[in-house]
Length: 581
Image (cartoon, rainbow, N blue to C red):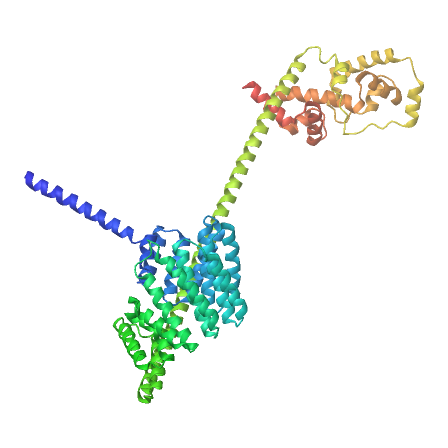
């Protein structure tokens, strides 16, 4: 039994390790290093891995777009290569985190634009890239962009400008001790030689060839130089020099360089043999040309890669060689093969264009869907933020309202308590003149209008203050005792008749003793009575209190009560309730 348990445990542990290994192996497929290693040999698989890497987010999107661009470029789908390079460029432009990567994308855009014959666009990106390269002091990128500008001008037939840019690129790299820059300079020397030879500028091509020979000698002394690189460079250079000297009718010198070419290992490989074809063709060695072309054709057939421009170039060399040998039958056969391959290449190119357009359409649809989702998400986020702001604002307003009400209630309680204390004073009713001096109220019910004659008459009378005070005390006692102020029909004339005074004398007496007019005096008594009534009868309505207190309407009570006490009758009743509680 124990033995069986041990076996089961071991099997479980082995299974877990196997799963872990598979997971690690699976994750290692979606790394930048792995995809960079395979995109040249297997571009389609690289694209599939990049799609999955984007879903898993194992690689940053700008690097994914860069690798997609390189993969499509390797498949000769330059439009897609340009599109993804631009996506990576735009991401770099937005985030501004890696100027080196942004510069690399700018170089790609300049070169891909040139491949698509969009020379103006290529020049635009090249100038932008040169500005970036100057900012971060990247000499290699600047040289690549200058050479790209030179190629653009050469293809646009601005030859002098083109060679000016070629020379600027070469001058940037000349004297460099970095292996990568020295190798790039050797390539530029070879490319410029090809342009010069095409333009029949043989002397200049020869001068560049000597510069390149010196540079290859410097590369040979570097310990880290890749195996076979120097041999291949010499092989190509000597074949070009043989052709240049043969063009200048210096056959002996040409043969010397041809022998130097043959001394290199590269010259005996199918690829290396093709370097000597221009010289062999010019010197009339047609049989050797046929042999060299045959070996290269066999190599391409073994790789099942005959539908390309390179294979057609080999066939065209064969046609020229057979024409030189006057073998027209072979010429006709090869030309038929050229036509068949050209048709196949055109068909493939059309299919590639269709596939490229489909891929671009699919990418466009995907981007539109992503943009729509992003828009919906943005709308939702904006809506949520708006609702959150509304909720916060509402809560703030509710809090402010609650706080305001709380303060008002506290103030009303304090006022109600103060009013209660004053009313509870037994001397309150007999000390109205003092109260009026402190709480004078101007009535808005029936403003008292005194004629100019009364005022003049009032002004003429003097020395009667003491008499007026005695008369008012008696009048006030009668009004309070009989509660005359509770009558809404009470008028100034009614009270003037009681004390047997004319209107002018009565008005002057009221002002001297109360500090207000007739309406203010009566309304003060009514408000005081309304306060007592609200305390005594808390269940009375405001309308009932207004009627009982002698007010013609509830709004008048509200208005005068608010002016006298600082709160409305309803607030006073509520404050009284809270005081009772």
